[in-house]
Image (tube, rainbow over all chains, first blue to last red; front, side, top):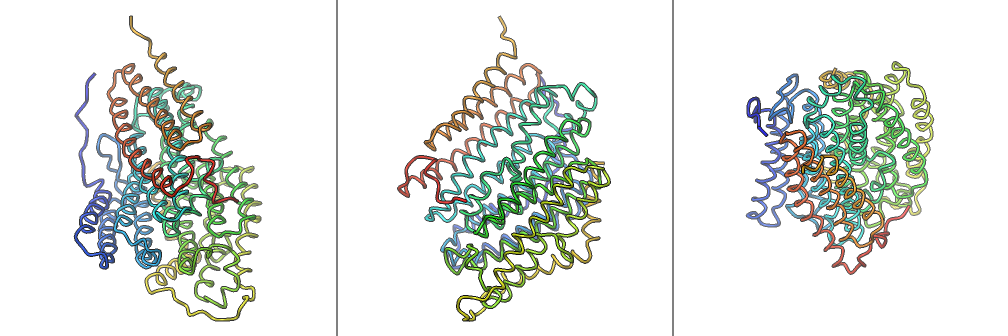
Length: 488
Length: 101
Protein backbone atom coordinates (compact mmCIF):
# COMPACT_ATOMS: atom_id res chain seq x y z
CA UNK A 1 0.00 0.00 0.00
CA UNK A 2 1.28 3.42 -0.86
CA UNK A 3 0.06 6.91 -0.29
CA UNK A 4 0.47 9.37 -3.09
CA UNK A 5 1.42 12.67 -1.49
CA UNK A 6 1.72 14.49 -4.81
CA UNK A 7 -1.18 16.69 -5.69
CA UNK A 8 -2.69 16.60 -2.20
CA UNK A 9 -3.18 20.30 -2.82
CA UNK A 10 -3.27 21.95 0.57
CA UNK A 11 -5.05 25.22 -0.22
CA UNK A 12 -6.54 26.99 2.76
CA UNK A 13 -7.79 29.80 0.52
CA UNK A 14 -10.30 27.42 -1.04
CA UNK A 15 -11.97 26.72 2.29
CA UNK A 16 -11.43 30.17 3.82
CA UNK A 17 -15.17 30.85 4.42
CA UNK A 18 -15.57 27.53 6.26
CA UNK A 19 -12.42 28.24 8.28
CA UNK A 20 -13.69 31.69 9.27
CA UNK A 21 -17.05 30.32 10.42
CA UNK A 22 -15.38 27.53 12.40
CA UNK A 23 -12.89 29.99 13.88
CA UNK A 24 -15.73 32.30 14.90
CA UNK A 25 -17.42 29.39 16.67
CA UNK A 26 -14.23 28.77 18.67
CA UNK A 27 -13.88 32.47 19.51
CA UNK A 28 -17.50 32.58 20.68
CA UNK A 29 -16.87 29.47 22.78
CA UNK A 30 -14.08 31.26 24.68
CA UNK A 31 -15.89 34.59 24.86
CA UNK A 32 -18.83 32.81 26.44
CA UNK A 33 -16.56 31.88 29.35
CA UNK A 34 -15.38 35.40 30.10
CA UNK A 35 -18.27 37.75 29.43
CA UNK A 36 -21.04 38.06 32.03
CA UNK A 37 -24.43 36.49 31.38
CA UNK A 38 -26.32 39.75 30.92
CA UNK A 39 -23.99 40.77 28.07
CA UNK A 40 -24.60 37.66 25.96
CA UNK A 41 -25.88 39.91 23.18
CA UNK A 42 -22.21 40.44 22.33
CA UNK A 43 -21.92 36.79 21.35
CA UNK A 44 -24.55 37.42 18.69
CA UNK A 45 -22.61 40.47 17.52
CA UNK A 46 -19.34 38.51 17.28
CA UNK A 47 -21.12 35.69 15.44
CA UNK A 48 -22.55 38.13 12.91
CA UNK A 49 -19.15 39.78 12.44
CA UNK A 50 -17.59 36.38 11.74
CA UNK A 51 -20.36 35.41 9.35
CA UNK A 52 -20.02 38.71 7.48
CA UNK A 53 -16.28 38.09 7.13
CA UNK A 54 -17.03 34.62 5.74
CA UNK A 55 -19.54 36.20 3.35
CA UNK A 56 -16.87 38.56 2.04
CA UNK A 57 -14.40 35.68 1.77
CA UNK A 58 -16.91 33.66 -0.29
CA UNK A 59 -17.28 36.25 -3.02
CA UNK A 60 -13.80 35.75 -4.57
CA UNK A 61 -14.62 32.04 -5.01
CA UNK A 62 -17.22 33.03 -7.60
CA UNK A 63 -16.04 32.01 -11.06
CA UNK A 64 -13.15 29.92 -9.80
CA UNK A 65 -12.65 26.20 -10.07
CA UNK A 66 -10.17 25.27 -7.38
CA UNK A 67 -10.06 21.66 -6.31
CA UNK A 68 -8.16 21.32 -3.07
CA UNK A 69 -7.07 18.80 -0.46
CA UNK A 70 -6.75 15.84 -2.77
CA UNK A 71 -9.94 16.60 -4.66
CA UNK A 72 -12.08 16.45 -1.53
CA UNK A 73 -13.39 20.01 -1.68
CA UNK A 74 -13.79 22.50 -4.48
CA UNK A 75 -14.05 26.27 -4.47
CA UNK A 76 -16.32 27.11 -7.40
CA UNK A 77 -19.34 29.22 -8.22
CA UNK A 78 -21.72 26.55 -6.97
CA UNK A 79 -20.01 26.49 -3.57
CA UNK A 80 -19.96 30.31 -3.51
CA UNK A 81 -23.69 30.42 -4.35
CA UNK A 82 -24.52 28.14 -1.43
CA UNK A 83 -22.02 29.84 0.89
CA UNK A 84 -23.73 33.18 0.35
CA UNK A 85 -27.19 31.66 0.76
CA UNK A 86 -26.32 29.71 3.91
CA UNK A 87 -24.39 32.58 5.52
CA UNK A 88 -27.27 35.00 4.88
CA UNK A 89 -29.74 32.54 6.44
CA UNK A 90 -27.39 32.15 9.38
CA UNK A 91 -26.97 35.92 9.84
CA UNK A 92 -30.73 36.46 9.75
CA UNK A 93 -31.21 33.66 12.29
CA UNK A 94 -28.65 35.16 14.66
CA UNK A 95 -30.21 38.61 14.22
CA UNK A 96 -33.62 37.48 15.46
CA UNK A 97 -32.23 35.14 18.12
CA UNK A 98 -31.24 37.17 21.26
CA UNK A 99 -34.72 38.52 21.90
CA UNK A 100 -36.44 35.16 21.67
CA UNK A 101 -33.73 33.28 23.52
CA UNK A 102 -34.24 35.68 26.42
CA UNK A 103 -38.02 35.33 26.19
CA UNK A 104 -37.71 31.53 26.34
CA UNK A 105 -35.09 31.68 29.09
CA UNK A 106 -32.60 29.90 26.82
CA UNK A 107 -30.03 32.64 26.54
CA UNK A 108 -26.92 30.46 26.49
CA UNK A 109 -23.79 31.07 24.43
CA UNK A 110 -23.81 27.48 23.15
CA UNK A 111 -26.70 28.42 20.89
CA UNK A 112 -24.47 30.61 18.71
CA UNK A 113 -21.65 28.05 18.69
CA UNK A 114 -24.03 25.36 17.48
CA UNK A 115 -25.58 27.59 14.81
CA UNK A 116 -22.08 28.46 13.56
CA UNK A 117 -21.05 24.80 13.67
CA UNK A 118 -24.10 23.75 11.70
CA UNK A 119 -23.46 26.52 9.17
CA UNK A 120 -19.84 25.40 8.73
CA UNK A 121 -21.05 21.84 8.15
CA UNK A 122 -23.58 22.96 5.55
CA UNK A 123 -20.97 25.05 3.74
CA UNK A 124 -18.57 22.11 3.74
CA UNK A 125 -21.35 19.92 2.35
CA UNK A 126 -21.98 22.38 -0.48
CA UNK A 127 -18.28 22.40 -1.36
CA UNK A 128 -17.73 18.66 -0.90
CA UNK A 129 -16.47 16.67 -3.86
CA UNK A 130 -15.59 13.48 -2.05
CA UNK A 131 -17.63 10.93 -0.13
CA UNK A 132 -15.55 11.69 2.96
CA UNK A 133 -16.28 15.42 2.97
CA UNK A 134 -19.96 14.82 2.18
CA UNK A 135 -20.09 12.56 5.24
CA UNK A 136 -18.18 15.05 7.40
CA UNK A 137 -20.40 17.96 6.33
CA UNK A 138 -23.60 16.01 6.97
CA UNK A 139 -22.44 14.89 10.41
CA UNK A 140 -21.20 18.33 11.43
CA UNK A 141 -24.55 19.89 10.58
CA UNK A 142 -26.57 16.98 12.00
CA UNK A 143 -24.85 16.72 15.36
CA UNK A 144 -25.15 20.48 15.86
CA UNK A 145 -28.83 20.32 14.96
CA UNK A 146 -29.53 17.34 17.25
CA UNK A 147 -28.41 19.49 20.16
CA UNK A 148 -30.16 22.61 18.86
CA UNK A 149 -33.50 20.85 18.49
CA UNK A 150 -33.25 19.78 22.13
CA UNK A 151 -32.07 23.22 23.18
CA UNK A 152 -35.17 23.94 25.27
CA UNK A 153 -33.83 21.39 27.73
CA UNK A 154 -36.73 21.35 30.14
CA UNK A 155 -39.48 21.27 27.53
CA UNK A 156 -40.62 17.70 26.97
CA UNK A 157 -41.47 18.32 23.34
CA UNK A 158 -38.04 19.70 22.63
CA UNK A 159 -36.36 16.70 24.27
CA UNK A 160 -38.56 14.36 22.35
CA UNK A 161 -37.79 16.05 19.06
CA UNK A 162 -34.04 15.88 19.79
CA UNK A 163 -34.22 12.17 20.53
CA UNK A 164 -36.28 11.38 17.45
CA UNK A 165 -33.95 13.42 15.28
CA UNK A 166 -30.91 11.73 16.83
CA UNK A 167 -32.13 8.15 16.44
CA UNK A 168 -33.63 8.53 12.97
CA UNK A 169 -30.71 10.69 11.85
CA UNK A 170 -28.25 8.07 13.04
CA UNK A 171 -30.21 5.38 11.18
CA UNK A 172 -30.05 7.45 7.98
CA UNK A 173 -26.32 8.03 8.50
CA UNK A 174 -25.85 4.27 8.65
CA UNK A 175 -27.49 3.89 5.23
CA UNK A 176 -25.56 6.84 3.82
CA UNK A 177 -22.26 5.32 4.94
CA UNK A 178 -23.07 1.83 3.75
CA UNK A 179 -23.89 3.31 0.37
CA UNK A 180 -20.56 5.10 0.37
CA UNK A 181 -18.73 1.87 1.25
CA UNK A 182 -20.43 0.06 -1.62
CA UNK A 183 -19.67 2.85 -4.08
CA UNK A 184 -16.05 2.81 -2.93
CA UNK A 185 -15.96 -0.96 -3.38
CA UNK A 186 -17.44 -0.75 -6.87
CA UNK A 187 -15.34 2.12 -8.18
CA UNK A 188 -12.20 2.02 -6.03
CA UNK A 189 -12.36 5.74 -5.38
CA UNK A 190 -13.81 8.03 -2.74
CA UNK A 191 -13.60 11.28 -4.70
CA UNK A 192 -16.56 12.21 -6.89
CA UNK A 193 -14.17 12.89 -9.77
CA UNK A 194 -12.68 9.40 -9.49
CA UNK A 195 -16.12 7.82 -9.25
CA UNK A 196 -17.37 9.80 -12.26
CA UNK A 197 -14.28 8.76 -14.25
CA UNK A 198 -14.96 5.11 -13.42
CA UNK A 199 -18.64 5.20 -14.36
CA UNK A 200 -17.97 7.06 -17.59
CA UNK A 201 -15.11 4.74 -18.55
CA UNK A 202 -17.03 1.54 -17.88
CA UNK A 203 -19.94 2.83 -19.95
CA UNK A 204 -22.84 0.40 -20.02
CA UNK A 205 -21.03 -1.81 -17.51
CA UNK A 206 -21.66 0.73 -14.78
CA UNK A 207 -25.41 0.67 -15.24
CA UNK A 208 -25.50 -3.06 -14.51
CA UNK A 209 -22.96 -2.95 -11.68
CA UNK A 210 -25.08 -4.17 -8.75
CA UNK A 211 -22.63 -3.00 -6.09
CA UNK A 212 -22.57 0.52 -7.54
CA UNK A 213 -26.34 0.77 -8.01
CA UNK A 214 -27.00 -0.53 -4.50
CA UNK A 215 -24.49 1.99 -3.19
CA UNK A 216 -26.15 4.88 -5.03
CA UNK A 217 -29.51 3.72 -3.68
CA UNK A 218 -28.32 3.71 -0.05
CA UNK A 219 -26.54 7.04 -0.51
CA UNK A 220 -29.76 8.55 -1.90
CA UNK A 221 -31.69 7.36 1.16
CA UNK A 222 -29.27 9.22 3.42
CA UNK A 223 -29.37 12.39 1.33
CA UNK A 224 -33.16 12.31 0.87
CA UNK A 225 -33.49 11.98 4.65
CA UNK A 226 -31.55 15.22 5.15
CA UNK A 227 -33.57 16.96 2.45
CA UNK A 228 -36.73 15.58 4.13
CA UNK A 229 -38.09 14.11 0.92
CA UNK A 230 -40.78 11.43 1.20
CA UNK A 231 -40.75 8.52 2.03
CA UNK A 232 -37.79 9.44 4.25
CA UNK A 233 -39.57 12.40 5.86
CA UNK A 234 -41.01 10.74 9.00
CA UNK A 235 -38.87 12.79 11.38
CA UNK A 236 -39.68 16.17 9.85
CA UNK A 237 -43.08 17.10 11.37
CA UNK A 238 -42.21 15.98 14.90
CA UNK A 239 -38.77 17.55 14.94
CA UNK A 240 -40.03 20.81 13.42
CA UNK A 241 -42.89 20.97 15.90
CA UNK A 242 -40.92 20.05 19.01
CA UNK A 243 -37.77 22.07 18.40
CA UNK A 244 -37.73 25.73 19.50
CA UNK A 245 -39.24 27.70 16.60
CA UNK A 246 -36.03 29.70 16.17
CA UNK A 247 -34.15 26.48 15.50
CA UNK A 248 -36.87 25.23 13.16
CA UNK A 249 -36.61 28.48 11.23
CA UNK A 250 -32.92 27.92 10.72
CA UNK A 251 -32.84 24.22 9.99
CA UNK A 252 -35.91 24.04 7.77
CA UNK A 253 -34.29 26.21 5.12
CA UNK A 254 -30.55 25.73 5.70
CA UNK A 255 -30.48 21.93 5.96
CA UNK A 256 -32.58 21.50 2.88
CA UNK A 257 -30.39 23.87 0.85
CA UNK A 258 -27.19 22.08 1.86
CA UNK A 259 -28.65 18.64 1.25
CA UNK A 260 -29.71 19.61 -2.27
CA UNK A 261 -26.24 21.01 -2.96
CA UNK A 262 -24.88 17.53 -2.24
CA UNK A 263 -27.67 15.83 -4.23
CA UNK A 264 -26.80 18.05 -7.18
CA UNK A 265 -23.10 17.25 -6.95
CA UNK A 266 -23.78 13.53 -6.68
CA UNK A 267 -26.44 13.05 -9.34
CA UNK A 268 -25.74 15.85 -11.81
CA UNK A 269 -21.95 15.92 -11.63
CA UNK A 270 -20.98 12.36 -10.73
CA UNK A 271 -23.50 10.01 -12.29
CA UNK A 272 -24.75 11.66 -15.50
CA UNK A 273 -23.60 8.63 -17.50
CA UNK A 274 -26.05 6.34 -15.71
CA UNK A 275 -28.89 8.86 -15.53
CA UNK A 276 -31.27 6.29 -17.00
CA UNK A 277 -30.79 4.26 -13.81
CA UNK A 278 -31.39 6.93 -11.18
CA UNK A 279 -34.04 8.87 -13.07
CA UNK A 280 -36.95 6.63 -12.13
CA UNK A 281 -36.27 6.23 -8.37
CA UNK A 282 -35.60 9.96 -8.06
CA UNK A 283 -38.80 10.79 -9.95
CA UNK A 284 -40.66 8.46 -7.60
CA UNK A 285 -39.22 10.22 -4.52
CA UNK A 286 -40.21 13.60 -5.99
CA UNK A 287 -43.77 12.45 -6.73
CA UNK A 288 -44.07 10.83 -3.29
CA UNK A 289 -42.92 14.08 -1.65
CA UNK A 290 -45.41 16.11 -3.66
CA UNK A 291 -48.28 13.80 -2.75
CA UNK A 292 -47.53 13.27 0.93
CA UNK A 293 -46.38 16.82 1.63
CA UNK A 294 -49.33 18.55 0.01
CA UNK A 295 -52.08 16.11 1.00
CA UNK A 296 -51.11 15.73 4.66
CA UNK A 297 -50.51 19.48 5.04
CA UNK A 298 -54.23 19.99 4.43
CA UNK A 299 -55.16 18.21 7.65
CA UNK A 300 -52.71 20.06 9.92
CA UNK A 301 -54.00 22.54 12.48
CA UNK A 302 -50.56 23.41 13.81
CA UNK A 303 -48.67 25.96 11.73
CA UNK A 304 -45.28 24.38 12.42
CA UNK A 305 -46.49 20.95 11.33
CA UNK A 306 -48.22 22.42 8.30
CA UNK A 307 -45.02 24.18 7.26
CA UNK A 308 -43.11 20.94 7.87
CA UNK A 309 -45.34 19.07 5.40
CA UNK A 310 -45.19 22.02 3.04
CA UNK A 311 -41.39 21.72 3.29
CA UNK A 312 -41.64 18.06 2.27
CA UNK A 313 -43.72 19.11 -0.73
CA UNK A 314 -41.18 21.76 -1.68
CA UNK A 315 -38.41 19.15 -1.48
CA UNK A 316 -40.41 17.41 -4.21
CA UNK A 317 -40.48 20.50 -6.42
CA UNK A 318 -36.76 21.08 -5.90
CA UNK A 319 -36.01 17.47 -6.79
CA UNK A 320 -38.03 17.85 -10.01
CA UNK A 321 -35.38 20.28 -11.26
CA UNK A 322 -32.68 17.60 -10.87
CA UNK A 323 -34.62 15.07 -12.97
CA UNK A 324 -33.91 16.40 -16.47
CA UNK A 325 -30.17 16.42 -15.75
CA UNK A 326 -29.89 19.58 -17.82
CA UNK A 327 -28.23 22.91 -17.01
CA UNK A 328 -31.66 24.55 -17.24
CA UNK A 329 -33.15 22.13 -14.74
CA UNK A 330 -30.29 22.46 -12.30
CA UNK A 331 -30.36 26.25 -12.40
CA UNK A 332 -34.13 26.09 -11.80
CA UNK A 333 -33.37 23.92 -8.77
CA UNK A 334 -30.87 26.45 -7.44
CA UNK A 335 -33.33 29.30 -8.00
CA UNK A 336 -36.03 27.33 -6.21
CA UNK A 337 -33.72 26.68 -3.25
CA UNK A 338 -32.96 30.41 -2.91
CA UNK A 339 -36.64 31.31 -3.26
CA UNK A 340 -37.67 28.66 -0.75
CA UNK A 341 -35.04 29.90 1.69
CA UNK A 342 -36.40 33.46 1.57
CA UNK A 343 -40.10 32.68 1.83
CA UNK A 344 -39.95 29.77 4.25
CA UNK A 345 -37.53 31.59 6.53
CA UNK A 346 -39.98 34.48 6.60
CA UNK A 347 -42.96 32.24 7.37
CA UNK A 348 -41.21 30.49 10.25
CA UNK A 349 -39.85 33.82 11.52
CA UNK A 350 -43.43 35.09 11.80
CA UNK A 351 -44.34 31.96 13.80
CA UNK A 352 -41.30 32.68 15.98
CA UNK A 353 -42.34 36.30 16.46
CA UNK A 354 -45.79 35.20 17.62
CA UNK A 355 -44.28 32.48 19.80
CA UNK A 356 -43.52 34.88 22.64
CA UNK A 357 -47.29 34.93 23.26
CA UNK A 358 -47.36 31.50 24.86
CA UNK A 359 -47.27 27.78 24.27
CA UNK A 360 -50.01 27.20 21.73
CA UNK A 361 -49.25 30.10 19.38
CA UNK A 362 -48.49 27.74 16.52
CA UNK A 363 -52.07 26.44 16.57
CA UNK A 364 -54.11 27.83 13.75
CA UNK A 365 -56.88 28.84 16.18
CA UNK A 366 -54.49 31.36 17.75
CA UNK A 367 -54.10 33.03 14.35
CA UNK A 368 -57.79 33.86 14.10
CA UNK A 369 -58.25 37.55 13.40
CA UNK A 370 -54.53 38.23 13.39
CA UNK A 371 -55.03 41.03 10.87
CA UNK A 372 -56.85 43.02 13.55
CA UNK A 373 -54.45 42.18 16.36
CA UNK A 374 -51.03 42.17 14.71
CA UNK A 375 -51.47 43.82 11.28
CA UNK A 376 -47.76 43.83 10.37
CA UNK A 377 -47.18 40.14 11.07
CA UNK A 378 -50.44 39.17 9.37
CA UNK A 379 -49.55 41.17 6.26
CA UNK A 380 -46.08 39.70 5.83
CA UNK A 381 -47.42 36.21 6.58
CA UNK A 382 -49.92 36.73 3.74
CA UNK A 383 -47.02 37.53 1.40
CA UNK A 384 -45.12 34.40 2.46
CA UNK A 385 -48.19 32.18 2.11
CA UNK A 386 -48.93 33.53 -1.38
CA UNK A 387 -45.32 32.96 -2.34
CA UNK A 388 -45.22 29.41 -0.96
CA UNK A 389 -48.40 28.71 -2.91
CA UNK A 390 -46.73 30.09 -6.04
CA UNK A 391 -49.01 33.02 -6.80
CA UNK A 392 -47.54 36.00 -8.71
CA UNK A 393 -46.05 38.54 -8.19
CA UNK A 394 -43.95 36.62 -5.68
CA UNK A 395 -40.70 34.74 -6.02
CA UNK A 396 -42.47 31.44 -5.36
CA UNK A 397 -44.31 31.79 -8.66
CA UNK A 398 -41.12 32.07 -10.70
CA UNK A 399 -39.47 29.27 -8.73
CA UNK A 400 -42.24 26.88 -9.80
CA UNK A 401 -42.37 28.35 -13.31
CA UNK A 402 -38.67 27.75 -13.97
CA UNK A 403 -38.81 24.17 -12.69
CA UNK A 404 -41.92 23.43 -14.76
CA UNK A 405 -40.34 25.01 -17.84
CA UNK A 406 -37.26 22.83 -17.44
CA UNK A 407 -39.51 19.76 -17.26
CA UNK A 408 -41.42 20.82 -20.38
CA UNK A 409 -38.18 21.40 -22.30
CA UNK A 410 -36.94 17.96 -21.27
CA UNK A 411 -40.35 16.48 -22.17
CA UNK A 412 -40.86 14.95 -18.73
CA UNK A 413 -44.63 14.83 -18.46
CA UNK A 414 -45.84 12.56 -15.65
CA UNK A 415 -44.04 14.28 -12.76
CA UNK A 416 -44.98 17.65 -14.25
CA UNK A 417 -48.69 16.82 -14.26
CA UNK A 418 -48.52 15.60 -10.66
CA UNK A 419 -46.68 18.78 -9.67
CA UNK A 420 -49.23 21.06 -11.30
CA UNK A 421 -52.18 19.25 -9.72
CA UNK A 422 -50.51 19.24 -6.32
CA UNK A 423 -49.77 22.95 -6.61
CA UNK A 424 -53.47 23.59 -7.01
CA UNK A 425 -54.15 21.38 -3.98
CA UNK A 426 -51.62 23.38 -1.99
CA UNK A 427 -53.57 26.61 -2.57
CA UNK A 428 -56.12 25.28 -0.09
CA UNK A 429 -53.91 25.08 2.96
CA UNK A 430 -51.84 28.18 2.24
CA UNK A 431 -54.88 30.34 1.56
CA UNK A 432 -56.64 28.87 4.61
CA UNK A 433 -54.05 30.58 6.81
CA UNK A 434 -54.88 33.91 5.16
CA UNK A 435 -58.61 33.32 5.55
CA UNK A 436 -58.18 32.46 9.23
CA UNK A 437 -56.14 35.62 9.78
CA UNK A 438 -58.86 37.68 8.08
CA UNK A 439 -61.69 36.19 10.14
CA UNK A 440 -63.22 38.42 12.79
CA UNK A 441 -61.36 37.97 16.07
CA UNK A 442 -63.11 36.56 19.11
CA UNK A 443 -62.41 39.72 21.08
CA UNK A 444 -61.87 42.95 19.21
CA UNK A 445 -59.05 44.14 21.47
CA UNK A 446 -56.14 45.49 19.47
CA UNK A 447 -52.84 44.31 20.89
CA UNK A 448 -49.91 46.60 20.69
CA UNK A 449 -47.62 45.45 17.90
CA UNK A 450 -44.47 44.30 19.70
CA UNK A 451 -42.20 42.85 17.10
CA UNK A 452 -38.87 44.41 18.01
CA UNK A 453 -36.61 46.33 15.69
CA UNK A 454 -34.26 43.53 14.57
CA UNK A 455 -37.03 40.96 14.14
CA UNK A 456 -39.25 43.45 12.33
CA UNK A 457 -36.40 44.40 10.00
CA UNK A 458 -35.49 40.78 9.23
CA UNK A 459 -39.07 39.72 8.58
CA UNK A 460 -39.75 42.89 6.59
CA UNK A 461 -36.62 42.32 4.52
CA UNK A 462 -37.64 38.74 3.79
CA UNK A 463 -41.10 39.93 2.71
CA UNK A 464 -39.58 42.67 0.54
CA UNK A 465 -37.19 40.17 -1.05
CA UNK A 466 -40.10 37.81 -1.73
CA UNK A 467 -41.89 40.50 -3.72
CA UNK A 468 -38.89 42.20 -5.34
CA UNK A 469 -37.47 38.89 -6.57
CA UNK A 470 -40.97 38.05 -7.77
CA UNK A 471 -40.91 41.12 -10.00
CA UNK A 472 -37.24 41.00 -11.01
CA UNK A 473 -36.22 37.34 -10.86
CA UNK A 474 -33.55 37.74 -13.54
CA UNK A 475 -30.68 38.68 -11.22
CA UNK A 476 -30.90 35.60 -9.04
CA UNK A 477 -31.69 33.42 -12.03
CA UNK A 478 -28.47 34.60 -13.71
CA UNK A 479 -26.51 33.73 -10.58
CA UNK A 480 -28.20 30.34 -10.40
CA UNK A 481 -27.49 29.69 -14.08
CA UNK A 482 -23.84 30.59 -13.64
CA UNK A 483 -23.53 28.47 -10.48
CA UNK A 484 -25.21 25.53 -12.20
CA UNK A 485 -22.92 25.81 -15.21
CA UNK A 486 -19.90 24.49 -13.25
CA UNK A 487 -21.13 20.96 -13.85
CA UNK A 488 -22.07 21.25 -17.52
CA UNK B 1 -5.20 -19.79 3.76
CA UNK B 2 -6.36 -16.30 2.72
CA UNK B 3 -10.01 -15.57 3.25
CA UNK B 4 -11.66 -14.15 0.11
CA UNK B 5 -12.82 -10.54 0.27
CA UNK B 6 -16.47 -11.26 -0.39
CA UNK B 7 -16.83 -13.16 2.89
CA UNK B 8 -16.03 -9.95 4.74
CA UNK B 9 -18.61 -8.10 2.68
CA UNK B 10 -21.17 -10.78 3.48
CA UNK B 11 -20.35 -10.52 7.19
CA UNK B 12 -20.58 -6.74 7.00
CA UNK B 13 -23.93 -7.00 5.22
CA UNK B 14 -25.20 -9.41 7.89
CA UNK B 15 -24.09 -7.11 10.72
CA UNK B 16 -25.66 -4.12 9.00
CA UNK B 17 -28.95 -5.98 8.55
CA UNK B 18 -28.92 -7.06 12.20
CA UNK B 19 -28.37 -3.47 13.25
CA UNK B 20 -31.18 -2.21 11.01
CA UNK B 21 -33.61 -4.88 12.23
CA UNK B 22 -32.62 -4.17 15.82
CA UNK B 23 -33.28 -0.49 15.25
CA UNK B 24 -36.77 -1.25 14.03
CA UNK B 25 -37.82 -3.80 16.66
CA UNK B 26 -36.09 -2.75 19.91
CA UNK B 27 -37.80 -0.24 22.19
CA UNK B 28 -35.14 0.93 24.63
CA UNK B 29 -33.47 4.05 23.20
CA UNK B 30 -30.07 2.96 24.47
CA UNK B 31 -30.36 -0.37 22.67
CA UNK B 32 -31.68 1.39 19.57
CA UNK B 33 -28.62 3.62 19.72
CA UNK B 34 -26.37 0.56 20.06
CA UNK B 35 -28.00 -0.87 16.95
CA UNK B 36 -27.00 2.29 15.06
CA UNK B 37 -23.44 1.77 16.29
CA UNK B 38 -23.59 -1.81 15.03
CA UNK B 39 -24.59 -0.50 11.58
CA UNK B 40 -21.69 1.94 11.60
CA UNK B 41 -19.25 -0.79 12.59
CA UNK B 42 -20.56 -2.98 9.80
CA UNK B 43 -19.68 -0.09 7.49
CA UNK B 44 -16.19 0.10 9.00
CA UNK B 45 -15.66 -3.60 8.35
CA UNK B 46 -16.74 -3.14 4.75
CA UNK B 47 -14.38 -0.20 4.30
CA UNK B 48 -11.46 -2.10 5.81
CA UNK B 49 -12.12 -5.20 3.71
CA UNK B 50 -12.53 -3.26 0.46
CA UNK B 51 -9.43 -1.24 1.25
CA UNK B 52 -7.38 -4.40 1.63
CA UNK B 53 -8.89 -5.92 -1.47
CA UNK B 54 -8.25 -2.86 -3.64
CA UNK B 55 -4.85 -2.23 -2.03
CA UNK B 56 -5.74 1.43 -1.44
CA UNK B 57 -5.65 3.31 1.84
CA UNK B 58 -8.75 5.46 1.24
CA UNK B 59 -11.07 2.97 2.87
CA UNK B 60 -9.01 2.68 6.04
CA UNK B 61 -8.86 6.47 6.33
CA UNK B 62 -12.63 6.54 5.85
CA UNK B 63 -13.07 3.94 8.60
CA UNK B 64 -11.04 6.08 11.02
CA UNK B 65 -13.17 9.07 10.07
CA UNK B 66 -16.33 7.07 10.80
CA UNK B 67 -14.98 5.95 14.18
CA UNK B 68 -14.17 9.55 15.15
CA UNK B 69 -17.48 10.98 14.04
CA UNK B 70 -19.40 8.11 15.66
CA UNK B 71 -17.67 8.92 18.96
CA UNK B 72 -18.86 12.54 18.68
CA UNK B 73 -22.35 11.31 17.89
CA UNK B 74 -22.34 9.04 20.95
CA UNK B 75 -21.37 11.95 23.21
CA UNK B 76 -24.32 14.00 22.01
CA UNK B 77 -26.64 11.01 21.78
CA UNK B 78 -26.10 9.71 25.29
CA UNK B 79 -26.53 13.24 26.66
CA UNK B 80 -29.89 13.58 24.91
CA UNK B 81 -31.05 10.15 26.05
CA UNK B 82 -30.00 10.86 29.66
CA UNK B 83 -31.84 14.19 29.51
CA UNK B 84 -35.04 12.47 28.43
CA UNK B 85 -34.56 9.83 31.13
CA UNK B 86 -34.08 12.47 33.83
CA UNK B 87 -37.37 14.06 32.89
CA UNK B 88 -38.87 10.90 34.39
CA UNK B 89 -40.06 9.31 31.19
CA UNK B 90 -40.03 5.62 30.45
CA UNK B 91 -37.10 4.30 28.49
CA UNK B 92 -39.27 3.30 25.58
CA UNK B 93 -39.23 4.90 22.14
CA UNK B 94 -42.93 4.13 21.74
CA UNK B 95 -43.55 6.48 24.66
CA UNK B 96 -42.32 9.43 22.61
CA UNK B 97 -45.77 10.41 21.43
CA UNK B 98 -46.39 13.96 22.63
CA UNK B 99 -46.67 15.05 19.02
CA UNK B 100 -49.27 13.33 16.90
CA UNK B 101 -50.89 14.24 13.64
